[in-house]
Image 1 (cartoon, one colour):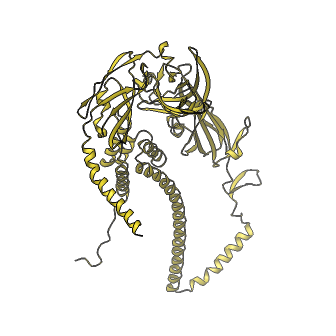
Image 2 (image 1 turned 60 degrees about the vertical axis):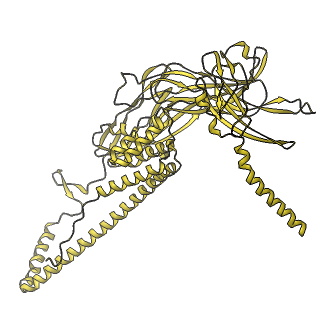
Image 3 (image 1 turned 180 degrees about the vertical axis):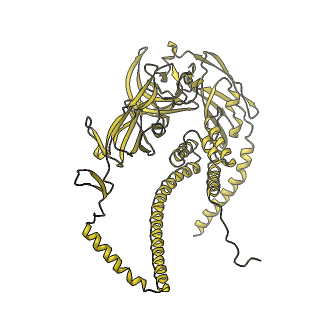
Length: 603
């Protein structure tokens, strides 16, 4: 037991001494004696990445190394740091290492690296040679490089282009990741599956990994696509092991060159009343009747007057995103129908990938109720679109429909024929009395009227009052019943609408709490279209509520998403509070003013 207490006391004393001398040791190592700069490869291909290593023989703060300021000719992509401590024969040595990944300039030439002033000490100087990407001198020393290409150079705004990335590796891949290309104000996503093959370049065998991305620029003008970046590890042979079959790994980083592009605006002759829709292929179809009982093609469509008929329109486009498709319900409302009512539902959108392209579809169900018998003509529906293959404007049309409307049910009157074969209309519920029955009824009426002559005035008044009271009570009961039924119907419809709206508002709240600007934009537009029937950008939502706080937050969200400068959007909760305030203000403004009852005992 005594020995145990001695050990514990020794460990506690050692911890105190270490804690006391540690700040002194760090303070004595603030000024380094040497700063050494090195690179992992030299020369380097234009637009390719290299790793600059800065080694300092002291512990310094990370902010002492500022590569973005000290490397103005290079694009700095990231920096990591590590520290080591060694104690040999009682001598303590410390070392801090910075590894900066930078992209070489597009212009070949020689570029100076250093000397750098770090923590009061000057480093050595290097000369980095930047060669053209196709220079034969690079093929022998490069173990990894990337190439990219676009499927077309002539690009319109919101047009889909395919960017193909090829990664070349001269060694077996151990692990890695390809960072997608980047372009401001554009939608970029991977399509299809990765493909791998082999290729011989200047006598060296390379593994080739191919990946495709879809790029949809959202604004016109001169722009530059930042090339994809590969970060990973490759297997290399090691001389440190006794077993030749084993190999070690080496980290590699490489990037593709940036691609400058010129995005054309919407053509000047495009009709302003139609949505700009660039696509490879667009089709528009219509089916008549419910999906479970659709009318067979080629047969005459027949319905009864007042009977609802369902039309289902489907707009399919290869290339654009789902939210780029024009609203079919807005186009249907522009159709002019004679003697019929038309009620379009909210359209449903879907998007998937097929054969390396995006395929978007919008489905709209429309209810048509004819008001008169005869032929009901439903005009054709046309959607203009821009063919990105032929580079010309085309139209997709759903054919018009001619529907035979039969007369409705009888209006309660029967046809009778007199002795002269002349047809007359007589209410079916009132039989024609015969002369004998007429005489009998007149006698009965005259007989029955005699007792009333003997009734006193107050008895007649009481009977009339009772009859009126019973009629009033019956009318009140019927009206109260109708109000209860209407209230139940309204409550059911409101409950359904409220539940759907609450689900969409929850999606907006989740995106706001996560400070995900893109998800907030999508959720708000979905809620706008479905619940408020507002299409367009978020500025339309600000105009609808006319709420200063909400307008300010929406403008800040748009700047964070589409500004040329990088913005870290952290205003999700503030935007959610502003949206709640705008909804509450709008609700109170739409409530009818309360009318107060006069005082029972006025002064």
